[in-house]
Image (cartoon, rainbow, N blue to C red; front, side, top):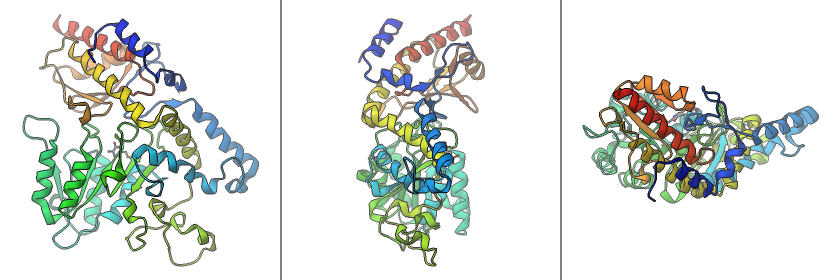
Length: 428
Ligand SMILES: *Cc1c(COP(=O)(O)O)cnc(C)c1O
């Protein structure tokens, strides 16, 4: 599509957008200018779906009316509450229902999965990850390799872009995997890098990892609700994601886990166990001897977190109602493409503003990361004054993520106008 940098054009795209109604389903806070914010921070915390409050209220109601009996009574008995999230989660990541479960928080789940899937043995003990990965992932891996008695500097191998480049090339990742060969125990990458917005070729990376006998897992914090995922077909071993970014399920929201079907009936896999992962047939007999449930459910520890799950359920229903990830992704590619277009037309020279996210839509999700070489913080503050909610990453990156559920083409056009105005101020 050929874009035009006019408000008229943006409004035409909005009028033709089959998802335009979904914006009304969210609470959009006011920006610093008193107008509804141009909220481009859904990569950090998604907006509140209007349906969430009633979903939580319903569980208050159950608690109020049934107390302990709420586990068995009410509209969604708590005993099985997490199961109500399974099908939607499976659709979300391209999995079979047996391969997914919703539980805990992201970093907790990453640890639980690493206990099972980082199994260093002899020569094979190294982990390949992104250099500058999200700190929680770095700390998780660092502590896991130490648990096994290795030095992080030795056991963790980081991928870094070629000099002069900001993102990783798939072929370089594949070569690194081949070089590590039988020393490589695990590849763990983000599905989308939180800093650069680069989406990795998860299928190719999984194939390369498996070819040398390594396990391959992904942290999908920035990919779930952002990309079309096919974890089962891509043959990914394990993955986890959070629900509060592109999945709009609220601060500290509950997390999703994927474990490939081939591990569904592997009670022998080492894991940290809890009663909620135990065979439900005799969970309440309180007997010795853990017997894991089949599939991802066998990694559960605790009884379900009903309140965050109620929000998550309402939020996932919106994704399905919108037509699922393929529909969201169609709009997302256009929306982010339009953002790239208006930014490139804002009159800011490359020595001031550089977009480090790949230009190829297949290699990115919603987010564009802007490296601002001059007065980045001042630009960020200026955007905030204009009611544009972005986020700032040290030392000089602004991340903007227009999301298809609630951002409009008009939002994006306004962002372009703000950047153009800033360009005039800079050259004045
Ligand atoms: C957001 C994010 C996290 C946050 O982890 P929590 O356990 O949910 O606090 C971790 N890893 C990545 C890659 C993230 O983007």
